[in-house]
Length: 415
Image (tube, rainbow, N blue to C red; front, top):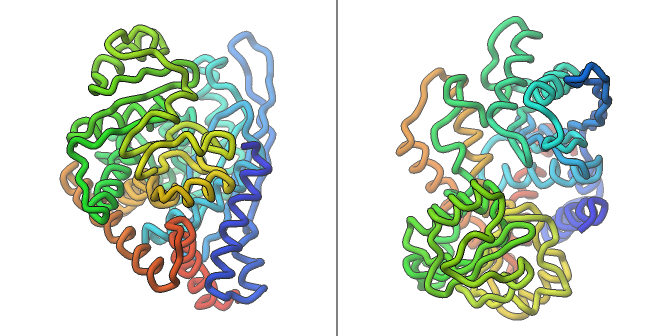
């Protein structure tokens, strides 16, 4: 899915929710448009002494429910439309999870693999200097996303602290533990997905133990989910990265495949199962399918191949609208991205709360609170779905999320 289509899809989901809720035209217009969009040009000195310029963005979709919240990605193909779509989705991801944030998102058009560590640091600090007046603990709070990590967040937090002349740990989340990070943050997306998926299975009268799982994506989210689902008793029968894939109906050795991936950068060295193509993973029979790679990976050309009872979206926008309709006709339950991948932003919220209070929780406390938040959210979506007689979990999730944001706007007198 190209970034323009991804943006259009995000807005169409919001408009569908407005239609379900019978919101007035003014409210719909305000809720569909970003409040603020910043574009910056970043000159950065390279190790060889040359200067390269990079384009970057930070978009605040809304701050009606609270400060903006959302990741920052480093990617060679990111652009305004992608960042806007992701900022919009973040508003409703936060809302459906019941946390007091609006949505924000950032991006820099760069291939970070081409930069040295020092060049990455200079780029990260340049970006923070450029957007410093638009971010902060009560304004807009960045976090890691594609090709960014806790170290990059630490550099940015430090740069903002230098500008402000005091430590503002809560201005960014996803930081290392040594500078105000939270336990459980690095695995939060995968762990949260497990909690939501397990609760949904129980609605279906099933359990996670022994369930066959296919994972499309072996990056941070997919690899972490593989370990977490396997530890919970599920059987990972297929997994892929962008170019290689493995299938084993008896269950993949996740520790071994992680070791091979780390050493070689691909899955070719795994000999216990059958080597297949990433596209063939879509057709593997399973109970649970976890799309954890790219936007639009499941589309009208391949949706008929899916042989799962439940799809739990770990990536943002992994299913196109055309594929959504096909899968729904097949009776496949789809847990939408704004719920199923909300673990990261929920634990980011926990980190922000801990930073503000100066008191830090144990991993057990984080996991208990995370599961409670997500199971409560799923229960509320289920009730909304039944009340409005909706077939789609996605439309129900957006419906309840849009209703909450619209209410905050109404109470503030914006509409």
